[in-house]
Image 1 (cartoon, one colour):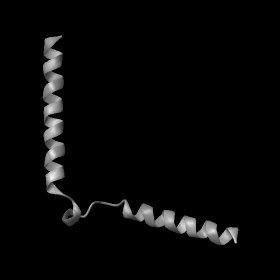
Image 2 (cartoon, rainbow, N blue to C red; image 1 turned 60 degrees about the horizontal axis):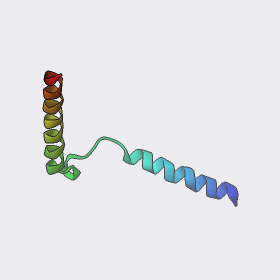
Image 3 (cartoon, one colour; image 1 turned 60 degrees about the vertical axis):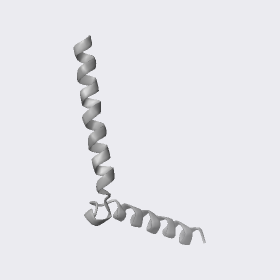
Length: 54
């Protein structure tokens, strides 16, 4: 019985790894992409400003 359970666990793990591939653009939210880009833009600007103040 233990061998059967272990096989199912490995099978499930394998399916999760397959799902981690390249993102399909139709499921990727453009709003989230824009939000992340904006966050990084302001983070870089803030760090540059802090470096100038030192």
